[in-house]
Image (cartoon, rainbow, N blue to C red; front, side, top):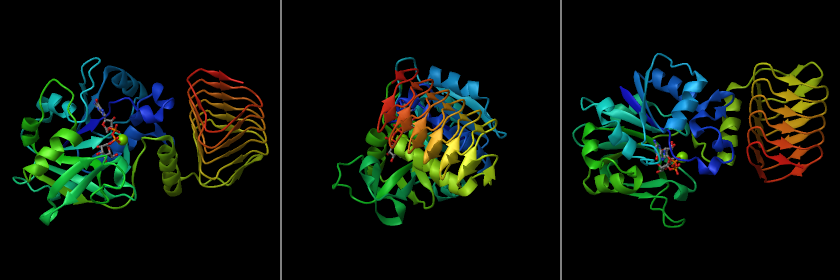
Length: 349
Ligand code: GDD
Ligand code: MG
């Protein structure tokens, strides 16, 4: 089976950390999201992956030297300065995807437990041009929402309906099985939205089907969701480290290679420190993700925050709830920040 992963757009809701890396390369418990995705695709019998990206994203991905897990990985590029949306890249990759059999399409910003094998089985060839994974959400208004008819047929699909007008709580989980017939529904050479243009048309022609899924499902698209994703995966795969040297780890915690932590510091619960992070003495870090090579000075407090790659947090500084400190930024000693976004390489006193 072939799979196409959508890894474009601007990641605006994850700025300023997404100024310097695509969403698909955000680390989830110290492993890039795309690496998690490759592993899951390989486990589900996929052998070829097409990454729908722009040139800069291709550069970032190649630099990561991810393990390909036995997959053949190809790139399909959006034209310069012309993002193709969520359907345009599928049309662009028509030759690579081929016309022989159904294929998988994934939004590249998801962590899920969806079985792609089961999805493929539920795709009723001949009837369905597209089968969408559907997950229940408490607040469906920030997603695509589907209304089902008989036999899992979707009779209506509406993207991001105003709150209070959602027809159901069943949301588009961003995983599709598509038949090659889909190519005739997507105009070439322009940006096309799968959710706003293609799905409503397929629903009107009775060619859109749903496959309901449960279990873990999360879109890392916003800082609080990104933190929540790390929190949830930490619960399942945290390091078994209680106390080591003069500091305390309150599980669940994940520490990358080469992390150093000073005396009397308390790490966790729910803290992820990337490789080579250096933490001073008497520091508290919890409910936070600290990217690789960051430095946290003595007596600093990091709670409910994201600290970017090689950022420097001065001694006695407090980085509190809702803060996102971008790569290479410097927060000077004693500064106290709440709900602040610090741009890449910026200095804050
Ligand atoms: N190549 C390419 N080009 N990829 C793109 C582009 C583009 O122009 N625009 C967006 N993408 C990719 C994003 O990187 C992401 O992986 C995926 O397409 C979806 O875009 P988002 O911007 O993350 O959309 P969303 O989260 O608001 O909504 C989508 O996902 C929801 C589930 O998380 C929709 O598909 C909703 O219907 C769905 O419920
Ligand atoms: Mg998204």
